[in-house]
Amino acid sequence: MPQAVRAVRTVSAVDAVGDDIRRRLFDGELTGGALVTEAVVAGEYQVSRSTAKAAIEKLTGEGLLERSANRSARVPVLTATDVRDIYRTRLRLESAALRELAADARAPREAVAANARVRAAGAGSAGASGASIASVEPDMRFHAALVEAVGSERLQRMYGSLVDEVRLCMSQVQGRSLLAVERIAAEHDEILARLAAGDAEGAVEVLAEHLGRASARLEAALAAEQ
Image (spheres, rainbow, N blue to C red):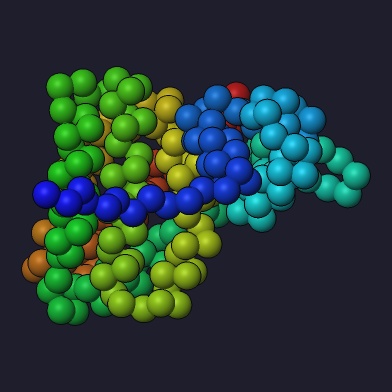
């Protein structure tokens, strides 16, 4: 019997290094203000300086690192003002998506499936840091699925430009266990129920409370730390 051929995605050294630094950022291993120099990256990952530079430039372009002229890159320090703006921008874009979905009384299956994964991440260990961090990716997927279900490439591009900053915020919220995973899943369920009922403004109201609570708690935590 012939052996199945499996497709393997080829990852460049630049992508591999960039992906791991991104993971460390989201896991809180690299904190705000930390320097990310070409020499350190090249040494840690055993790659050339040019590869390290390209990986750093890629992450800088995504807004996950910042660097000024003749300065080494560093992890941005998220302020309460940054967090507020990121969440308000999310609310504007996601609210538009909810209104369109509610007009057709649609609760996207992909969002339903993603929320099941959110709830599973917190099952049996509500409030634990590990469970909270595990919920970040399916939580991101839930919100992205709502936007994607509208079927607008331009809306998706606009939302996509926020994704890394959103993930960084959500990782910090859950890394500090500021929100219980079960409550997140319950609010997602409520959004889906309002959509299925064609209640656009009800869905937007739940979303506003949902995002507003996360924003307020992270803003307060950052203000206390800074």
